[in-house]
Structures are given as structure tokens and as C-alpha cells.
Image (tube, rainbow, N blue to C red):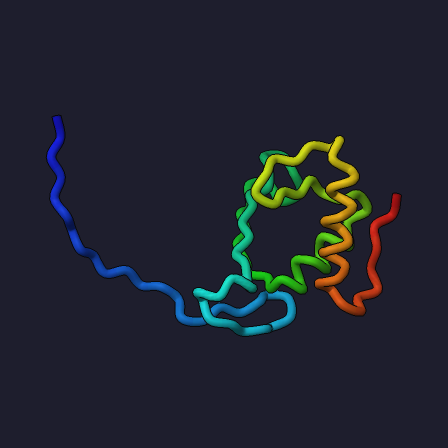
Length: 107
């Protein structure tokens, strides 16, 4: 059996975050700037490099729309490659977010 005690700690949180691509600044607790992280695989050109950066909604959309093949996307659900109708709806939402960007997905 375990018993627990409450411990209060102080934590440093960023006050402001800046998009690494366009320079847009925003408050940390507003969800329009996102932290992305990935690690390159062993043996790749970026062998074992790890990246962490912030992108705003518009820059995430521009990045995704620059892909030749759309990624699998989820909105609170698991998506599969067979969800092309749903993915097309999501693509239209992403295109609306990007405004006048001259980018598209090729089939």
C-alpha cells in the first residue's frame, strides 16, 4: 500500500514563443504556435540529430502543403490511408488556414 504527500514545486514556463520560420511571436499559453520535435534515424544523412523548433499554424500549414504526398492527419481520431474523403476535407480546412499561399499537393 502507498500513501502520498502533496509537494508544491515551482516550474519555469516560457512567457513568449516565436515561430522559427516566420518570426511571429505569441504568448506561450495560446495554442497557435506549436513545438515540433523529431530525431533523425541512425545511418541517415542527419545521423542521430535531434531537432526541436516552434512553428505557427500558418507555417505548419505551409510545410504540410509543400509535401508531394499528404501525411496521415488526425483530429482526435486515428486516421488510416483509406480515409481519403476525410483527409480531403481536412486538406480543404488547411488550405483555408493558409490564405493566399501558392502551394498545393500533387496527386
